[in-house]
Length: 59
Ligand code: SF4
Ligand code: SF4
Image (cartoon, rainbow, N blue to C red; front, top):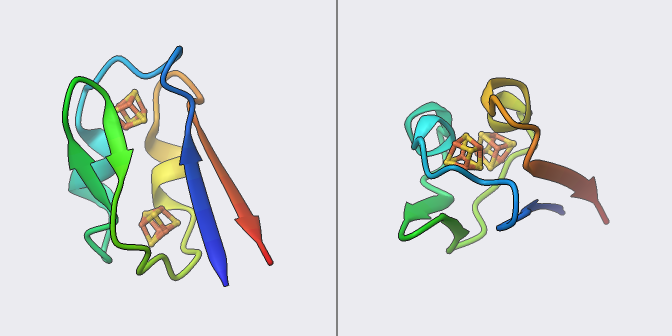
């Protein structure tokens, strides 16, 4: 399974990851929060995040 994590220290809450994600994995609060993990490992969020706050791991 794929698991994404957001570094809350880096996240600027721009919302790009939430817009790009085909799996509705992110919810925007004060920072991007990973909710339901329907991540399919497409890497869109990792590539689009302007501050490199997102990490994708496969387990
Ligand atoms: S890797 Fe793709 S599916 Fe997974 S959280 Fe990022 S944008 Fe969404
Ligand atoms: S794209 Fe990056 S900086 Fe923007 S909300 Fe998502 S995690 Fe935060």
